[in-house]
Amino acid sequence: MLIGRLEEQEELRSAYESEYSEFVAVYGRRRVGKTFLIRETFDYKFTFSHTGLAKKNTKAQLQNFQSSLRSQGMPKAPQPENWLQAFNLLAALLSQSKDQRKIVFIDEMPWMDAPRSSFLTALEHFWNGWASARKDILLIICGSSTSWIINKIVHNHGGLHNRLTYNIQLQPFTLNECEQYAQGLRLEMNRKQIMECYMIMGGIPYYWSKLKKGKSLAQNIDRLFFAQNGELRNEFSQLYASLFDHPEPYIDIINLLGKKKTGMTRKELVESWKKSSNGKLTSILKDLESCGFIRKYHSIGMKNKNAIFQLIDNYTLFYFKFIEDNLINDEHYWTKSHDTPLFSTWSGLAFERVCLLHSRQIKEKLGISGVVSSEYAWRVEKTKEHPGAQIDLLIDRNDDVINLCEMKYSKTAFSIDDDYAQTLQQRRALFKTETKTTKAVHITMVTSMGLVRNANSFDIQNDVTEDDLFRF
Image 1 (cartoon, one colour):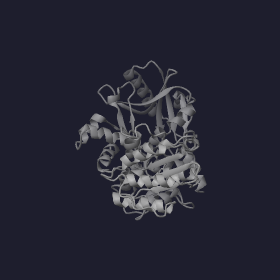
Image 2 (cartoon, one colour):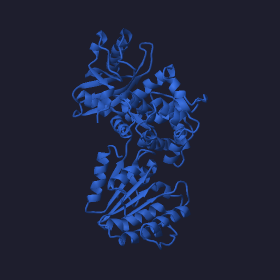
Image 3 (cartoon, helix red, strand yellow):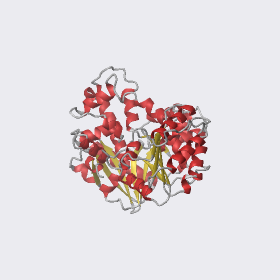
Image 4 (tube, one colour):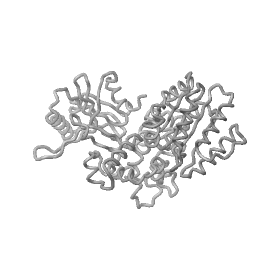
């Protein structure tokens, strides 16, 4: 059951229908549905398909490649001694194929690039010296190691420089797509439950596929995360190990960012993590951002060097909060946690992250999809003059308005009391004073269950609800 992915399918079909040979890279984090997308789009019909072996040496990889050749049209394929020979054998297999358009799908390609294997050199030779000189080849490569594909293929400075013709980074599902998926799985979940599930799992299709119908969401979360052999209990270590050859420094940075809700500047990270060079830190931050684990944002009016890095991966943050140091051996932990202060604190922060991941939907509700705008955050440290403030989402618009977004999660409609109303007004005034903006500043409430209409709600220019986040 393929949900969404319309733009990605259109790109894959365009590559197929091209009159020239095309080189396509599909990448994204573990479990996001890359392989499923490619197989479904082409109805599982490939001239040649192959999957690399995890953590195996070159000899094992070449033996595996030989097996794929033998099972797909070359029964007497010899054992290649190196990757140049392996790709020459592939070229021979494709040359004898009668398929009008020869689709070559190589999955988990980063695993095939073992140390000192000269794999990239052979791939360059195969594409530049043979495939690109024809008009009938569609080469699709895929892999969870996003950093490898970006650094070795997308930003290649050698023989594959600018050779990639289609670059598809597969993103997690939106709330809307998760709702469609849940309906397809016959889970019978309402939007409140879908929102809570998204706050735990994010939009990772594989995680959602593990939910069982006939069970409540709380029962499913207990089964997957808190049961002794829960399928997602130990996903954390596997997740980062699958993406990065040396995951330890990445996990170090993730741990640091996980301890500070608002994120950290590069300077703060350098001061807190003293294990490597600035260049290495830059590479790690770029990789984590490209995988969707962190977001890089700027405080409005500040320069690039003051950018803030914030951990926004829902699964990782849920793991840190409830699993990593959980000494309570209770298989019904989540069911019992719903009315606790810990749940309330977590759900408020998790809802904010969901909102940040659905800023496009917020803009749609505000009617500014066609207005040029930029997204920022803003924070000012506490002083003797004022209590400080943090705003996670500002939408700076070209029509002379800034939306100051306040995000609140509650089980019922949110009521703005007198104290919170005063806080909002003070926050807006402080923001205008500190930034010296001349634009109109609209306080925009993004809530899970809407606003209670009272005297304080009249000062709110815009009201965005949970249902609005489920748009497209």
